[in-house]
Image (cartoon, rainbow, N blue to C red; front, side, top):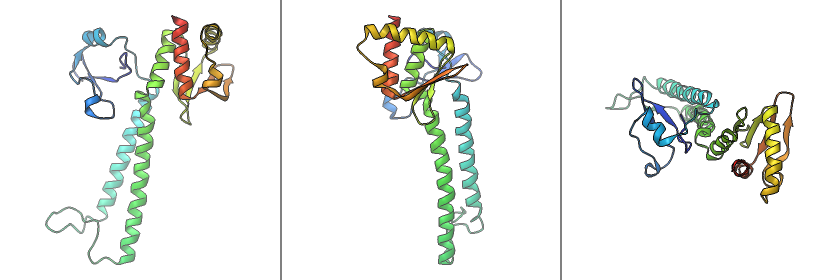
Length: 226
């Protein structure tokens, strides 16, 4: 679950307790790790919501990338399993009597394989950072508070804020923006909407914003609600 600050909590198996998942960063910035029973969790951290629908796939991608990296390392180490390091019993990464060209070729091969595994890990982790993306979390909460329940706020393919609106939500948002424009000295188009950022279809409308545009739209929605 996500608490009212956008932090992730995971259920403790076999209990009714929930434990906060630390954010990336220094330990001094982390919240409490003491499990809380569900009623106490709600009392202290409501309203709570489910993580974005993309998280399940993102978690799977991270796990797959970790498994692939483990397999790659195991395979590379297996190539040298027949020459353990002296006194350690662990595989040696280089043979003392190995031909120079063979040594360099093997080093290049290892570098290519490890770089590929690392790049896949970095890509999976970067995509999974959506869960702790404050711009996305706050905007998604603002849409929910404004009763725009059929909208989805995510990171777009190029890192932009992507908002997918149903026809009814698109109409409601247009009305809110029209009202808010008379009350707030801001212009969403000039601050955050990318050129040609609206794509309308029979089933949905997608809007792309910069992060500043996402923050402004959050403020606009909250101001309209007030």
